[in-house]
Image (cartoon, rainbow, N blue to C red):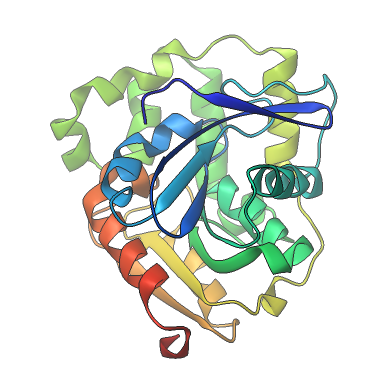
Length: 267
């Protein structure tokens, strides 16, 4: 990914996206306050085997939408419109954190579009993360109020210390967070929302990926999804925190390639 997007207008939303590679199509869905750029390293590693499409959701990155609140269902419908608009009838989908919730909603509302589904560091659609990880969410919210002074501590929640030693520039990544805007307030509402859909009806092959050291969405929260699905299995990445695509793109790309190219009967 070069960081220079193309745009697709679907209804009131002008979606920014990047596409590279060849082979089966994999659509990547970013987390709460991220953008398609979180997948730059992962895309480079997947492009020899897959056509990877990374895009910005509403109120994120370079995507432009109407100045109004949106729901998880609308974000899923945006993704479906993008997939169809790019001329694809069926794709694989990878969702990270909140993007995993958008991916679940897409797979339930537009089942015919999703071949295989990968959910990383995420939680079930009907659930509120505050209920599943009250201490973690409370700590994150408190640290956000203290920015930029608390930037390094907040980075320590997302990334393990060993990784921050390798990438020290990430210690201050949250120091550049802009003051609250109408756009960021809309995004927060979307991220905090739930969707009362029966995610256990997901019938396609599903891979659950979690980080052993994840303090935002604890590994067991993601892993328990697999136990209630008919065609799912899970992997836990040792020594990895919340943002798996940033921390271990090589290992994640290997697992994605194996899962997305294996015969359906093996899952």
